[in-house]
Structures are given as C-alpha cells and as structure tokens.
Image 1 (cartoon, rainbow, N blue to C red):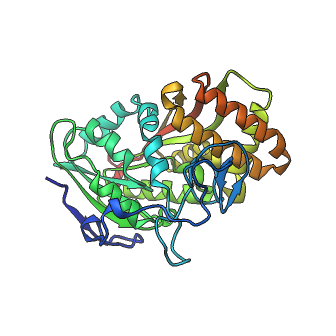
Image 2: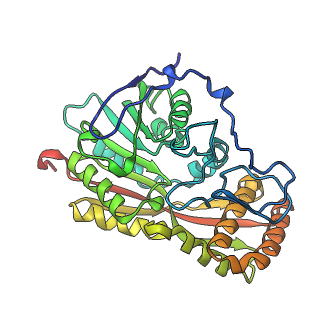
Length: 359
C-alpha cells in the first residue's frame, strides 16, 4: 500500500503537484546535460557550469560539495525553461544517504521525543522537512519516532519532491501510520503561517548554504510557530584525511573560503543558527555528526574528493597544478583501500518555546 500524498496551500509556500500528479514516473527521469563528463573523462569535479581537468575517472554531475554559490550541487534532470530552479543530482543524494544516516546524532533524539510526547491534545505529529531532496531525513527519522506522523516535504524541485514522496516511510517506530504531502517553495522565505500546526521542523545539510538573514528567517519562523527544529549535518569546516598530506590544510582552507562566498555561512552556519534560535528564547543543543569514510565507502569518498578539491581550485585557481597531482594521489589511495576521511558536521536541536508561552 502506498502512502497517500496530498497538496495544500499554506502561507508563503506555494503548492505544486504531489507525486500522484506527476505525469512521468521517477524511473523515466534521467540526468540530461550535453556538457556533463562521461565515464573515463579526465575531471576533478563538476564545478558550476565548468569541468575542471584532472585525474581519470567518472564523476556524478553535481556530486560533491562544490557548485554555484548559493546552491547545492545540482544537475538538470530534463530539458527545462532556463528560469526553472536547478536540479539536485539524485545520484549524489542517494550515494551519500547511508553516510548521512550513520552520522546523524542519536543523542538529540531523546530530548526531542520528550518534547513531542508532551504536546497537548495531539493524536499525532506534523513534521515539516525543509529542502527535503529525495527524502533521506524522513527515511531516517520517521522510524525512530513513535506515534502517527504527517510529513510535509518542502523543496524547490518538483521532481525531487516526487522521489521523496514515493520513497517515504510507511510506519513509525511503533507501527503507527506515516502520511506525506509535498509543497514546492523557497525555504528562505518561510513564515510562521507556513508552519502553522507544525510539531517539528527538520532539515539536513541545509544551514551551510544559507545566509545569516535566511537563518534568521528560519529561526523566527520556528519560534513564531512554537515548534522545535532538528537541523542535521551542517559542515563544521574540519576534515581529517589518513594518511595525511602536506596539501590537506591548504585545500581545506580554500574549500571553506568557497563555502563562504556570496554571503553564505558555510562552516559558520551552526554558530549563527545557535545564536539566532537562542535569541528567540530557544534551548539549543549541539552534537557532532561526522562522516567516517573508509574502504567500504570508497565510491562516496571518490565523489566527495572530486567536489572538495574542485571547489578549492575554483576558489583559488593558483592551486590547480598542485591540486591535480594531489587528487590523483588521493584517488589512488582511495581505490587501494588505504584512505580514510573524517568530514566533520554538527547537528543542532533547537527547542523553541511552545506557542502561547506554555513550558
């Protein structure tokens, strides 16, 4: 039995067709880009609209943490109007999902469960997932919470909303029903009205691609709606590679500079979010959520390396020559099962004051 999927208008978030109204099945949606690298091409990474030359190997278009400032790594899924928003690469989101699931903090779930269990007069919870992508946050969290759940999936991309809805969980930890609806819209313009009736707001890998003002808008919306927020997997600006290499620090610094372009917060986002939520009276808890990548995650490590180095080279073109040799060496170690990478992230739980001033 498939999940019922509905559409609904609320506040500033415009509604678009849910998964049952998408004309083309998900299986028929394929990445389309005439300039995308082919298997065997020599590339470092897909960086915005440019392909950066480098070591041998295929790369998922849009993979890795590089991309146009102000957006996550994306690739168009089909020919579309030039004004349409860019598409996230589902292949990259699928590749990183197991590492995301393993990294997210379980220590933040108990205080969240206590808050949700104490909601007055609730027979279930309404969870708004912002920038849901293909829905990995719901697949991780819904089976870890008891009780009936209704997930509202927000994203700018209608095709990712389709993927998220059709692959959403069917039941909660105690077997209660999980339902889903989709809403297309820009989370940077979220309002308390859009979160009316929300029990919880979630997001994954979102904060670091927002500006300070956008994080302030998010915190204000959650505080205005009186609902907690669980915001996971924000980059912390620290990467550890074993064995080490003399160029590790320089590449990491250039990547962090790339993350901060055009006013984005990148590795400063969690601190800004903690301050913003605290300013609205929320109790904020932080917990590390690192990716730990070894030989079993070689495919993800390869794609991450290409994006990480590619972003550093885009930020500092003077690194190109040394970066190409560095990447080739790192990819060889990855292929041989000799490379281990820890990519540090931070999870944030903000327990906003319930609406109406109740404790």
